[in-house]
Image (cartoon, rainbow, N blue to C red; front, side):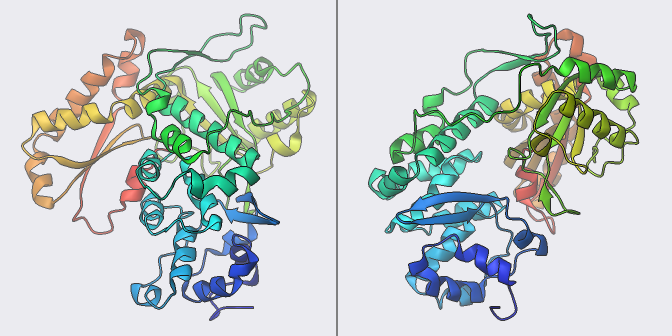
Length: 434
């Protein structure tokens, strides 16, 4: 079954699976105006959320990538069909599109609840805030969803805590050796939170909607005792890589897809002690090792595979022939954390330095800030002070960094300036924090 030759059979079935069978006829109508997904999307069935809805089990896609339909096509839909379209676009890869279509959900049927609930557990605080302040998104609307999906509610709760801990808890990561085994690792030192958990929009939305769960998600078993990164780090050092610590993300936890094999793959992040040692690796600072261009990538994969097998861990979860190998320097990680914490401070620096306001200040992982002015005129008025804004930003952030890291960390902070009249300006990409 193809709809105007827009969609493959697999794509159609994947959209059907996200909705109750009773809505099948309306979903077919929506598919007729829905622009097609990328070819790899229908081949990759990993990105799903399994949701119980009465006697049915729905599979809601983690993300979709279609362009939005034309308004003249949308106007021909019934109210139910428009709601189906709106819920589908709450799974879009663009956060601005997710937020836009969230506002179109009337919250008048139980099948809509999972699409809203999943947004609460994501990292975009503004969307959770929107849900919190929308009256129709209340406990009554989510009652059936919560009753049928305790495990998923626990997962959403865990994600909320994880994102709060990452961006707002005030935790500082310090790299130390394990006091018992001596294995390299890291220790989180708690400071007063930047934002208390009970003030975090994800928590407030989850509590209001009745989704917040005190039930702990089931722990995944990762293997038997004896797992020690120290041995693997020693092997990396022998390979000429000054690794300080290593973090692995399993296939199940990973959000990275290898376009060549159309599958989600695990990845390894190797943290280098100093910026100088990182630069000696010869890795492009902008592109990183996304294309596995670092000459020793395959040797690292082989060492990792051997280590996983020796440690009697899950090879399927922790290894892939095409797995990504990333490198980050510890000074960069320290600066990156402070960048995410200082968005408002940079906005204030701009306000006190130039006569025009920045419309957006986005923290990003280069690490630094993407600063967007509303008009080209504002951009030009501020341009004479770009260097001054950069120096003041660096000075402000460096007051929060230990003296030993000053020289390496200062140069890492960069600012990029834009204005909204630039052709092909992509705010979604500028706002990304990954």
